[in-house]
Picture 1 (tube, one colour):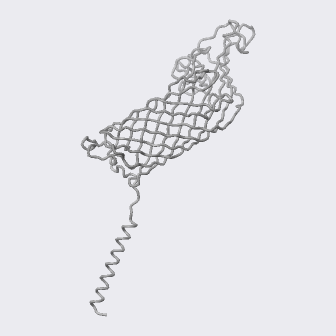
Picture 2 (picture 1 turned 45 degrees about the vertical axis):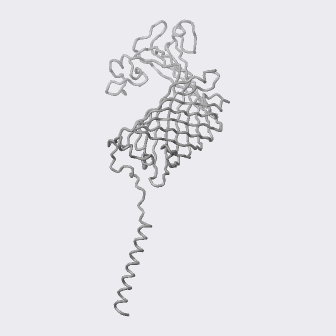
Picture 3 (picture 1 turned 90 degrees about the vertical axis):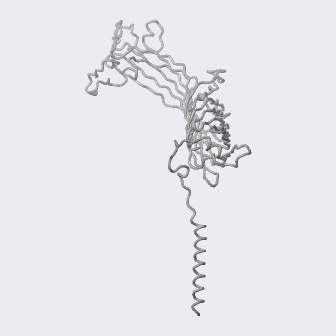
Length: 402
């Protein structure tokens, strides 16, 4: 073989190997998705100008990568359907809570994931502040410790029950009768897709996912009784009578609590969408979700009592100011449980108006409505398993890179 032919063959082999290597690199050296691709220099507070916004197409303004939001919720809640409240189920009681969202949108595929946690608590009760027989503890006010050898060296009263109420200079009970006490939590995991912008710049993001909700409804009834009521002839409970001679412990008080705590554990499937549109620095957005699933219900009922007996007050002697109790006795009955299952359906809708402050940070305000249309058990009344619950009100929050 001549030298010329050998040289030509070697050059051909080198060219083929180079081409194959280039093709392999193009096909296989695809970099993985960078989880911090949305802003690796963390310039969240970099200013953004009107000219920048005018030049950006709607598709470009829809951020990709990680994003997060926080909203303060001020949602009213409806009352339960009970014979105690009668027609009061249409009344609303104010509540408050928080909403957190975190998600990720793939830059190239326009798909992502969204996690949402929403919690809102409503509290409404008729409360009467009842002074204790001993209105205040002198030792607590003067900062002196009990004579007991178990007392700490910093002037705290032992036991803690003998002290004044935390933050006050007096001793009292807040006697409560609940009207609407419910704690609501919701956890969502959604798969999202981002569609192409519409003619006027709006973008639709369909979603499908699962939703786990918890609603703890509390029915509380409290009564306060004391031996001081017996002086006027109003005998309310079998405590030592102060008008009888020879009774060693003749001053006592008791608070009784009858509680029914109903837990609703709800697991549902859901689907929905998010629609948003930019106009200058403003962004209009709306979310809608509909969910359906099963509710596992369980109600716990028990009675608690706290009896306080004082060392003073024999015969016609009046209580000594600041005298500590001699004993405190607490009792609680064995809880009873009732369980049930119901089919659940509802929806969640909200609308918001945001204003872009910096490159990645926006503020927003809006409203939210959460409607559980059926399948909720409230107030612990047996048989009232299929109730509804609505929450709606205003929201105020921040967004990061969304």
